[in-house]
Length: 410
Image 1: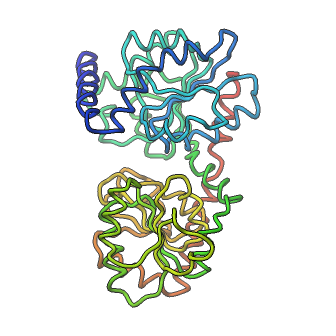
Image 2: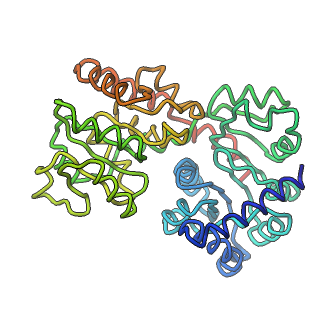
Image 3: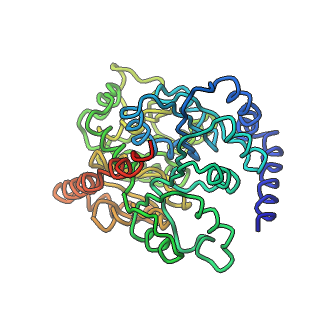
């Protein structure tokens, strides 16, 4: 199985090299890894005491951030090294002041893992949510480095829990402790003999709750919404954009609309504008004078979506029609009624919000219209918004639970 794993990694790298010819993200993936070791050699000092966090992408960084901040607050002598798998994480967080060192994680191999651990010499290592790299984990284990999975989630269909999953279970054996989001994950790990487990919850909830208590003001968004009922599309893909475009063109309901696409490239924005086929305002062109002259605002930049939700009422979140649902905790933290596509089974928080009557699952435009009509009744909307806020408040505390365990290893 180890050989199959190595072949799979090699094949993936070959495919990335081919894709890099015409794909900018793939090119960044390759270029970043080419410089990782030289960066570490140049920047890390022998006297540095490093705490290493590995995050797949931007979402996992935000998930790990509350614990990073707590470590910095209580153990300021340590330096934080953050590694990313994806360019979407590295490119948007490489200059974060919380981070001392940041780079792409070199491809998982025996040689790379040995070289990386030798250069970094981490005192602790944290993998966020679901990152499992065999050679890195094995090397950490060999060097007796306390290694944690935080905000972990497991599902029964993963190889860990199959008859052929001995290699994957070996990776799990390298962890010092698992901090898991839900009881399903706890039960699954227990079923294969792991007891070094805590159901601590999701650190993302701590993150979004904290942000909702003191959000960054967005004067243009506030001016645009003007305290009118507002529907927002968060990290939308084509399916959500098609639904809202048809809804806008056919409804007699009066809303403001904010559309924040997952892809903010110029070609996609132009396609979105063509699909809407109606008057709109681009955020890059908005100001205090023209913000109230349109009822459709297109967010064509990155970085403000999480704070847009403080001004909106109903959030249609992207990715739910493809099985790649984007962050629904951010709109929930601001008490938005949430609407998602029906392919959300991999995201337990989605089902929990649905069960709490804070979110609705749809499969079509007709479903969307039915949900909006339901929410147009003022009492229904307020009950849904309250349910979302309560869900977030009840989930706060995961970071402190983790800290109470890991602080003993500093």
